[in-house]
Length: 305
Image 1 (spheres, one colour):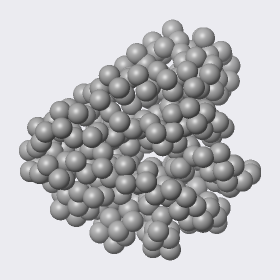
Image 2 (cartoon, one colour):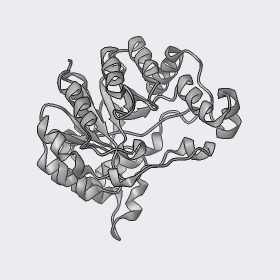
Image 3 (spheres, rainbow, N blue to C red):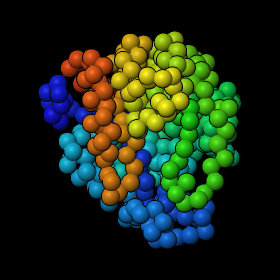
Image 4 (tube, helix red, strand yellow):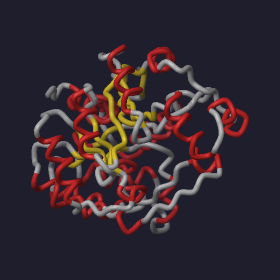
């Protein structure tokens, strides 16, 4: 893709794969049908076959010149959708999935998803209301450690789920479980496992930087509009966030992402443009930009189990 630094290979580390199964699970919580969600959301409902949605995403990535995306099955129980997408386009997608390790058979579900070819375990402690010190979280991370190349993605900080809000579904999250510092013992115990904290820590930026400074296997993803910046001190901006992240974590541990999710919006180009502008102003050179915008995710993709 053409950038201010020249042609750079761009890969997106954070795309939600909102499948037909995903919307079916939400519709069941609402006492509705998938078709009944469309007028409420104003979004296109995906086809029932995950491979067809995967083809739509490949066309969308091609349109923007994006070579690969990490796609997330965004509810427990939808792992098969992401697995089908990866099976159809193994060179275009890394498959991640949301897990709830403290649910009944939650650890077993993680093992099955990894056996199906998925590469990223997404933990949302505040959403599912558990501490990262929980024994079943340790068991889940041990599964990742036993499969080299598996990423453990841990959402910290402020958590809002726009689709739930639009559908009027409750989101009884518990922010007591949102601090990146709680990830420190796990990251130390498993130095070979790449841990990813999205959205620069989503309001816990200082703590996320501390974690990165102490644990070289922790990455930050840059995804979304990063609206959490409004909670920071006066003068904080996306430019200053990138500048500090580059100084502490370095360019090799920042993963560009958009947090794209639904159609017809598709790939969130405005997020990419804003982050490129911020990186330029933060003083990133061509080598750093190439790593952040795609090279680092490609390096994770090459860590085959």
